[in-house]
Length: 407
Image (cartoon, rainbow, N blue to C red; front, side, top):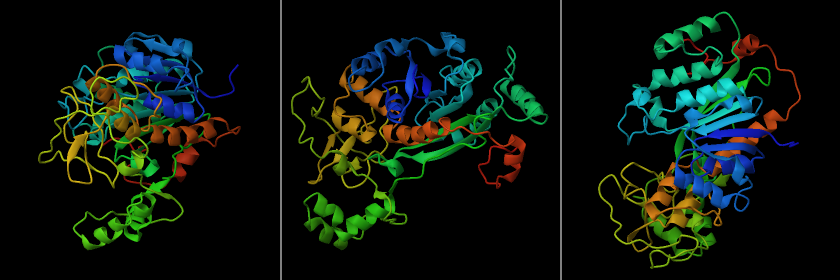
């Protein structure tokens, strides 16, 4: 029998969240994904770049599964499809047929895990979607209050709050906006993470402390330390003379690392091959890169812009990098994989556009690992939590508190 905490993951995609949680110590009982190519990618890495076994990969529509057999799993996790709430989507929110939050919540009700971890785009916090986002959180607090057949979500939400007025929540819930660059990813990637901890396990959610800072990068750029590491000592003087360079912000805390840049991430890869269709590590150049207003490429000496994946393919600007000579080219598949935190032996299945879509849809592995480590520590504790209402009463009020009734 395993001594590692176990997880059930929905909407596993190419495995970014799964790989991060695995590095944090979780053992996957199931990775559920409906997309054929993504499942092929998961299988291609099983027992190789990743420890999961091929048999834990379930190629299926997550809505069709019965999760009762996973009752007692330690963690239910999922990067719920973001298209209904993305700034680049069609903005249909909860009425979008691709909205999979009800499926994830049904898995939580059936499996009753000790913890839940959900990732989504910050667009879900926009005013148009905020009430539905808070409804998701309400359901996590008391998932046993199931929606009735054909019940409007607003009516269901009122029933949940009526129950919470009479009894303690089953899960303590919190959420954070997390920038992957603050945890060592060479990418500015802000995502919403929702965490729920069953009340008999703990009364507070656990979040990692940032390990990397923007201010530290600014200091290392200005002092020349960064340029010396890359054997480009003349760049420090050049930067000092170009005050038009966009200033980086934040406290240069010497106790933590600097933001990781694109140049840092690409060390050792060399120039991409100028031949398309070459098998291997996917470090193959693709011609035709261009930039246009609002879609400029990532700079070498900052974290990359957010890698994206859309229904019409990968956007031109966000998938490009500006080189030292001012020219622009596309990131290769392998470079994009490094930006997301995938190891070089992690293989992706499909065409280039399909591989880039899988990478762009993935959860940044550094973030998944950092949050996962906090959860493994929490789930290994042996303690008795304080009563829920006592701990909730002691919490300071804050703007984003989700312990307040909806207006």
